[in-house]
Length: 313
View 1 (tube, rainbow, N blue to C red):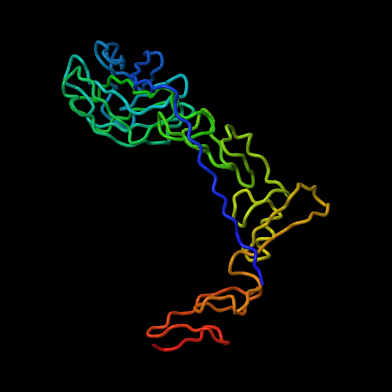
View 2: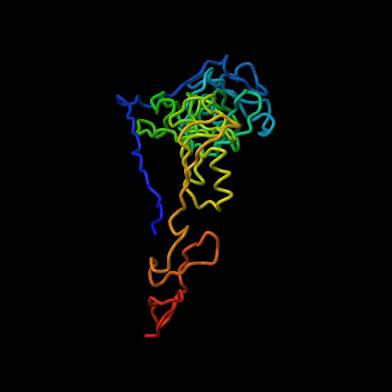
């Protein structure tokens, strides 16, 4: 008696490379109008741009309430670090910072880690603080966590130019890039493929949220457990203990009759004892399932009328 078996389909992964060498990271130094502070020490200590004549210093030394500054990048950029300087006319500088980001410039709930600021004791030395992972954001918050003398800062940020994967693809800067899988999407503002909302599906390499559409009721071909299985497929899989391959050849509207073909997974269905290897037997479940016989120390299984019959060595 023949049994229908699974067919494995392997699809080659698509790679997309950048056409040219990506530009190097750049140090950005936004103007004072794009910076904000909880307090200012004095009229001469409110300049946090790199290489400014002094620095920005808060009114007091309470770091939680006043030892931080924010920068508006104006558009979303891929930030890989910040550049720190201390006060140019005094030995006052920050030795440890926490970097946070925000989507609205109001709530800074996402922290990207706390970092030591090295070499900052030299007044005009620029210390590069690299993040553990790149962040795509518009707003940055630099929070002082430790300092020498006074928590004074001059700050810029390190930006990676836009030379990554195109929309719908993901991968490291300069490639190689792979297509976002089905049921995900990736737009310009995302660093990675984003999952579609529950019970929606999308094609490979989708580029925006609207590409995620409601899961179809009928139509298509999928195995049990496949993320794009239709509602009909999932229902059949549930009824048949998830041991089937389902094919619905054409789309059909709700309420109409549809021809559906399904086949049992290997080791399920109407198996004959004669077809089985010596060390297998048929269970009493319906439909019959092939089960492995338990190990036999010092013995071996033999073909016999009774399943799993063995002989000692």
